[in-house]
Image 1: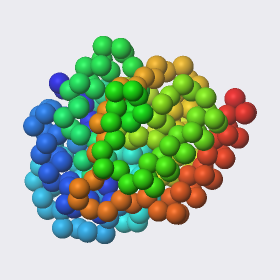
Image 2: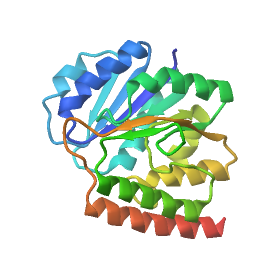
Image 3: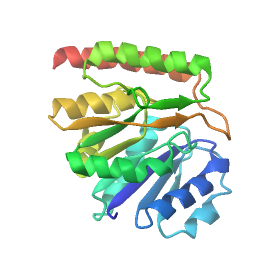
Image 4: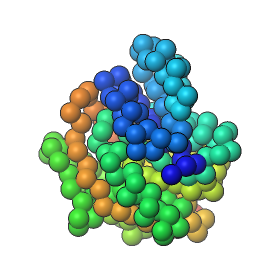
Amino acid sequence: MKNFAIIIPAFNEKQNLEILTKHILKILPRANIYIVDDSKDKDQIPYFKKKNKINYYLRKNKKGRGSAVIYGMKKALVNKKNQNFVEMDADFSHSPKELIKNINFYHKNNFDLLISSRYLPSSKIIDWPLKRRIFSLLANFLIGIVLKLNISDYTNGYRIYSKRSVICIVKKCGKIGDGFIILSEILLTLKSQGYKIGEISSIFKNRSRGKSNVNLRLIFGSLKGLLNLFLIKIKK
């Protein structure tokens, strides 16, 4: 499968990035990978500079996951050969083994956005702490009340996008906040433009290496962003 760009936002994922990129390129050897790293660790720059299929961007300041994804999309659009775009996390909670299944389903249904959902009947969540489960369920419940888009998982960042949807995202999104709320902003934006959105089941596994980046600051920022989304929705 060719013409795929894989966008990976990262923060303090040194233990995972090299392993993850090797896994991805075994499955999709012709894909182009775009890592947007907000860490302060420069040790990985020499390693990734030697890899033809890997584009590594170390940003000076932590600007958030949503910002990193949009930054990666902009960089990936520069290469005209990239026609489809995958977003996934660096911590192996999003399994590279699902890529082929997801891509086939995405193409078969001609989606503009395919979301790997943790909350479809055949999906599974493995080894996730109870407080993270509660936060995720509450966030999806609240966002669902605001957006009402018939989506089961608004906040999972394992997604496939068409080129036209990515062009729309980089033009219109990233203005209401950062973090995971941008995932919901993208959904609202694409839905309002009439783009085709679907979901597929996924097995979500809690990270085995490294530390989660979710904290109170991110949670409060997401709540503020949700309020902004509500104001946008009622204006449409």
